[in-house]
Image (cartoon, each protein chain N blue to C red):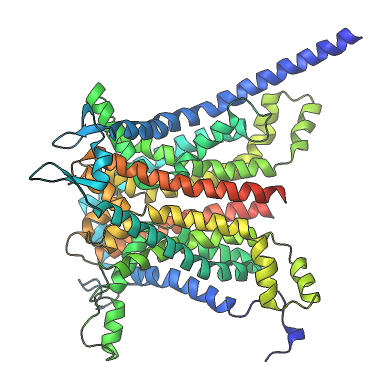
Length: 270
Length: 309
């Protein structure tokens, strides 16, 4: 038994072990998947040698190119549009005198987070089928961009709102005291201070759009394959380690954007 | 004098109205996009659920309650009478069970983890949070795939066990209920840890010291002080796991192999091979109703807590 006087009373026995097990469980499967992407053999689970064979074959693959192109078009557009909308909405809805309809506006902004993805997916599919049938409207890949923008907005909104809530109000009133017009105060004081929140929000919006599978799978028309859909198509065929290589690329993109968003947020905390 | 004051007040009120108008205008683009492409589609599936199915997918504009009837009853092929068929109900109950088990196990693993994280030094805490945040935001499809690689017949676990001579033939784990349960746990564990951590991080640990001074053991401090104080975080975490687990689509699709269905696959099926959109819409709305019930309990439980500080 350890001497009770030397033990931090905050520590609970066994919690450290559980924490380490949790992190292990979360990481071991994805690390193994990444490891096998460097396998030169053609079997997903049998190791033959280390090499970048499958990255080469993925990068030379025409279907992969198309999927990557579609993904980038959709994610970039959805990120830009949703981040702009979320920034404006956050400014109009955070620390302002409550306007009529503000509580309802909060609900609408957060709605995409509360509805299970599969419901959003079939609802969006029904919606686009209806406007295609009734008005002959089909935006092509624009359908996917619009669907993605909807669920990206709340993700972009959260960090921007958090940043606005932390912001020092006295700076704005100081600017006003120095005869800055409201627009000037916003342009020179608020907006520069808001940039980290906007970047962090944009990074999150990009990840959720880049990774989306459920909604994309149901809404996508023929030829609108994105990277997650490409992976799904590969799963249904005899698998080669190419799928590991592409999965690894997807994971690395997520890790990169999460880390960027995280570091920006951490700088704020200091 | 009074005139000047009232004029100033009038001017102020006017400026405030203008500010409110401007703020509403700023929120408009986001609200319009979500309104048209997020809220309207939900109303459309409500309408669709009361229509008849068209033979090759889509709907026919004829009012019908068949979709809801078909949820519990099937028309007998021979005499047209309605027979109680619990197939869909069983899938709903099974999904509910999966979601409850996932929530409970995630809480049992997630609480100690979040507590351990919250009691580290600030620098260590940052690393732990990043460590949990990365899987939180990583591609769910890829993470599910990673589980599939491990539990396949020729996967890592079976290879390891056979290599050690523990088993002779591979144990079938993929495409079983076990695989789905494992996949759900793996997918949603970070969704439990992060909200719990957010709540535990704000905990005033002087209260734990006070409990200690009053001769509480560490376990007593845990059950009587720490857990009651972190209840809002526990409820938030449970909800963030329960709702997506109940509507899970990717996990059963890949790890259940289309044999063991959950609600999510069942709904998607009606829009694909099932070609019964109204039924799919009705099933989606019944799932939505379950989610709203869960959210209602959340709001009711937290609104009481907030007042106490």
